[in-house]
Image 1 (cartoon, one colour):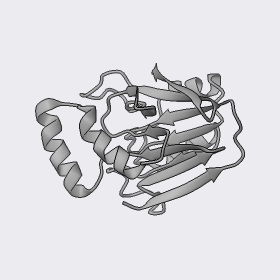
Image 2 (cartoon, rainbow, N blue to C red; image 1 turned 180 degrees about the vertical axis):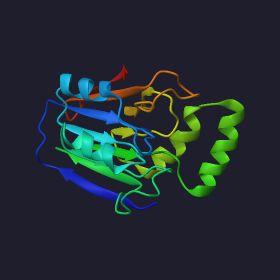
Image 3 (cartoon, rainbow, N blue to C red; image 1 turned 60 degrees about the vertical axis):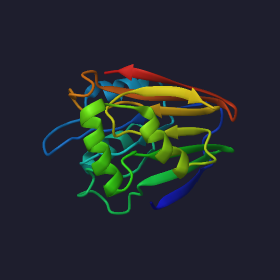
Image 4 (cartoon, helix red, strand yellow; image 1 turned 180 degrees about the horizontal axis):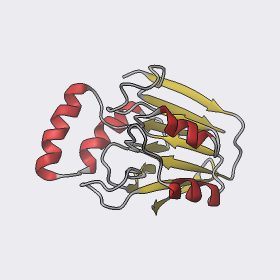
Length: 193
């Protein structure tokens, strides 16, 4: 999987980063207005979209709030081909991995079948996430439509859930806020929309 490396020099600690995933907007649909409200009230300085954008207007709308970076999801076939499937950010020495989380086409198909039988199980995704970002302190992902935030072996794994309207996997649309106090102190929050 192709991965980009991005060094963000304009952010300094402390800072707040908005996390959003799985907007799944089609033609003539608009982003939930609570997204704008939550990110503005939280005073985020960067927004990270973790895939399944589906419409360039989503990124354009988020850019009106603040700088937005994104990775490609499994449903992002029609938007810019330059969007990478994974990125590793370096913010003043803090490494943050970004991916949608669906992996290769074979991983996606296998996961779809397993998900249908047993639902979300983080350990299935963790193998992929750890292999993509072995040096990251924070790993952000989407795809599951299930919000998740947990620190395991000093790595913070966070999935902001799905920002689309109601999902069969999680009937509560949500986004995330990542609070970075310094290189070694950070936490996350899931915010229901």
